[in-house]
Image (cartoon, rainbow, N blue to C red; front, side):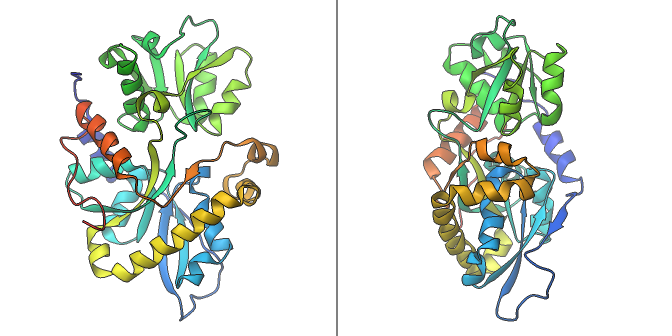
Length: 321
């Protein structure tokens, strides 16, 4: 498809120049044990990131010789300058952000997979519309006002792919940047026609009887798309290969336990995210895996190139290259 490239370079540059706006969180207030190596991990305070605090609480990272200090960031792109300068040793963020950053000259490496969308059934994000909107397919969003939290992210990329796969013209889509917490109200007031929402905002919006789920764009365009990956700078991988290895080995164990202890994750979410116990109990949890599923990342990269988000799939993206 032919799509006019949006102002992605300018957007990324602007985001990279902003401060990370982090809120610090640490396993405890005591000094780091001399037997453990301290690393700082940046991440978003969302349910998909839950394996990190779970692994800290369960002592899994300590078992592998690491003491993890968690720093919460306002967004994936805001982590990149902190990773580049060494403020964060590792960041857990959206892979598309990493692809765009590398395409614009930063030298980042994906050290592990982290979370993936569900290829079928209920998914972690979807489009919500009003029942009286006469919008019954992704293709019907042509000319409509669709809210995403940021332009040139996984949200507009996957919706563009879903529209194309249904025979529509992705260039016909209109996107408005609106924070996730504000989208439901804007939809109810008629200021937007559709809202692209992740959990926990998706089920909250669907509690309104006048709203309905249009569908899951990721499943229509890139089923099982990687949602988060663990990333560090090329410099850090070169200077601290043993640290990266220990982190990946610890994360592999964390993911096994996380997937086997769903109830423990749900118990963690109220304190971690501020969810009510009821919301935590009903939350759709992610498909967690430390495996780097390169085929899905390549598909993500191909679609990003096609839509003008990046010029080409970055080389030397993974730590084993």
